[in-house]
Amino acid sequence: MDADSDVALDILITNVVCVFRTRCHLNLRKIALEGANVIYKRDVGKVLMKLRKPRITATIWSSGKIICTGATSLLCSSKLGFQVIFTDFKVVNVLAVCNMPFEIRLPEFTKNNRPHASYEPELHPAVCYRIKSLRATLQIFSTGSITVTGPNVKAVATAVEQIYPFVFESRKEIL
Amino acid sequence: MPGRGRCPDCGSTELVEDSHYSQSQLVCSDCGCVVTEGVLTTTFSDEGNLREVTYSRSTGENEQISRSQQRGLRRVRDLCRVLQLPPTFEDTAVAYYQQAYRHSGIRAARLQKKEVLVGCCVLITCRQHNWPLTMGAICTLLYADLDVFSSIYMQIVKLLGLDVPSLCLAELVKTYCSSFKLFQASPSVPAKYVEDKEKMLSRTLQLVELANETWLVTGRHPLPVITAATFLAWQSLQPADRLSCSLARFCKLANVDLPYPASSRLQELLAVLLRMAEQLAWLRVLRLDKRSVVKHIGDLLQHRHSLVRLAFRDGTAEVETRGKEPPRICPAPPVSTVTGDENISDSEIEQYLRTPQEVRDFQRAQAARQAATSVPNPP
Image 1 (cartoon, rainbow over the protein chains, first blue to last red):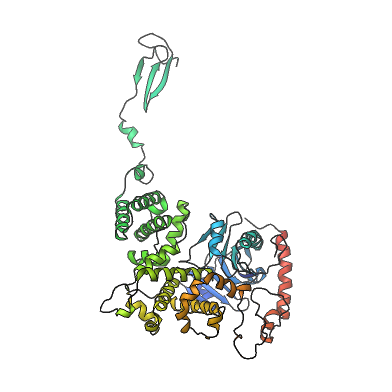
Image 2 (cartoon, each protein chain N blue to C red):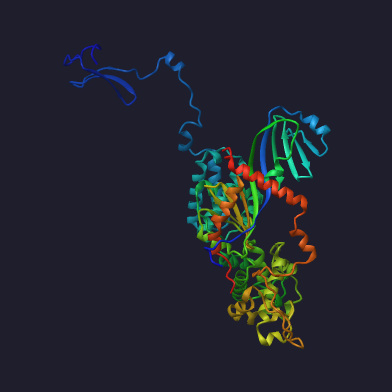
């Protein structure tokens, strides 16, 4: 496989975290009592609402701030609607998984990418590679599976494109 | 400055307000005579306008070593002594601790964090000198949690901008193997279990190298691999007497803790050895299994380089159909090369087909993404 040729890699988005505000204060107690899938955490002052249709967990504060996690696409995460106007919808974090068709030699990869890559086998089986400019973090496993977290989908895709040549260098040679 | 008066010496009017250090003075610019001097002390009303500078904002913090820092430095030295590290390590570790302490985040941290910081500094020093010290060992000595240790370790490496080399496997093997209490006969260790240290070390090293080459070490904690390798090395040096001893019993005899993943590593290592044995004609006919292959570890290790290359060609091994009566032509199962023409089982195909609902969702998501990318994201 030529490193220069275009490789179509499937990047699967597994989690989207987004934040939005409702313009009004929310009565947590009422939501907690009337809602069907809610967990009221009084000690931290928030309500957890777990939905099954788009499989999402929403954390709701009384100030009107809502954090939504678990969506598998950007559209799903915006489906959570109350009968209020919500503003400031912002995707905070996108987690995606990608599989390389080869295995990767992690110690060699770390040595070649010293400042950005961090590998501690005693703590975690993967190499943690941070791209500051994209604010993205990649976790590279020796099986070739790569987990990318970034602020938006484009950053995630760019991160994978950037990491591909480095990972290709340290791949396991098929003899 | 004109209009301020005259110099008593030369009579000029050119008086300049100048300050000698922090004391203001009126000086004649012609002859240099000091006409008036500011008052050294402040008046009561002046003092009323003074504002206190808190200790944390003054430079006092950096000039004096606080009691908490002194305690930390003492703990660093004690830890180095307990671990019997060379004296140069002590100075380096102390320097790292002091460097870390200059950051406000560390200075204001909880005592638990400062305790763990001691361990982190010692660990970084050891890693940089290729001294094999595991995080597990330090956590046991400090009675700290590995999670807490890992978070502080990551933080301090980032804060100090250090490049910490990875754990040296060969050194770790030597240190860890030497800690096994099997080199002298004792009431708990019968004579047939006693082994020569050098022979065991060299064989264990070879087995660990083999594990490294065959992808058993990458991404995993190094210690269980070494435990499994030591066990196999010990067994293979006198297989007749030792095959009956299990891994757990071995660790108990040697007075070493058995790490949980060691048994799976042992099975993986035995599988690798069996694949290598398949490549040797005189071993292939013996039809070895996981117990009998131990007797031949010596031979396998002697030729390990070529055997590994043969056994793991194309990422697969030849299927064990050789030696069976009619030699069938079996295709080697493809592992890494995916042609896309493989048959997909019915159960599997369900995962690849999209339901109509998913198709609609996907189309809507695509449209939404188009719309979203045309509008710039809020920063």
